[in-house]
Length: 418
Image (tube, rainbow, N blue to C red; front, top):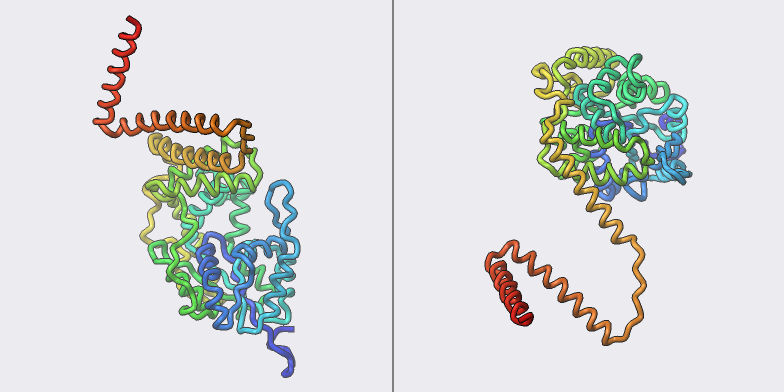
């Protein structure tokens, strides 16, 4: 029974807006804004449920059975039930939940998710993006998760999923076939409650996407913390190749949690700090088939008549696009060495910091007070001598003074020997 079918005496539950992705369509940025705006939104009658920013992700993972590939990962059992209970108990106008894993669910999982919120009306919000941008962005994202495909291997599998690695091509379309995702959800949610938001072109500021999202989810723009930069910024061509070669060297020996801690949280952020190499763009020879596929999708969307916020033409590579001037697999050796050094420094600093904070403290040796004082003085003197040498590297006068001291000491030693 939908919210509109309840009797006149029944209390209406708050509507539930499920933002289901797609992946690589500004979802992390929108989720950050929602989380930072939750108190303001609550004042307008909108609930963003969860105790932490990761709560919604944990809940959806609980629903679909997603677990980190790591030892002792029992998952967040019961977190989906907790999310549903929070939404069901909300007395305001509506609830907004955002997690892109929802877009990859099977029909049975979709039915389970929607029925969990009954008798509330469930709305589905889908963000979609220019397919050329999605392919390029998804390749580098997969590299930052441990994959080792070259650009040719990856784009070949996306173009022809039957003959390429299933983990590349088939997996891509499971998450990015917009029409398939819409078909799956439309079996459970009526079309008039499905809202399609197009991601504006890459040169548009993030606020444009936020404005469109606010319209689709019935949010007051004034309640949103809108001064947030884009997140999950993609690395460039050279940085992507560093990640790919690192993954080849690791050979899958890290579990998922180890990889997240070491690579996703240390190496990749360090690579982003350097002067980035050219961004990853679809090469000219791939633009034709991608444009054809995107155009066909747009024509089908127009015939279905979904509620669209934005412009469906934003889903088609611009007519002026001729592909990137540099292929994603063209990497200069000098750039590669410099970027690898950045990653190595970051990993070394992180290891040193962790070692310092987790090492066992040595048990102090019993000694008399006077002896400890004398020993401490010797230690300070030792450090001071080497600190003076460091200063001498930067100060010519200090360097001359040390040289004069060494000459005097040498003459004194010779006199004592006579």
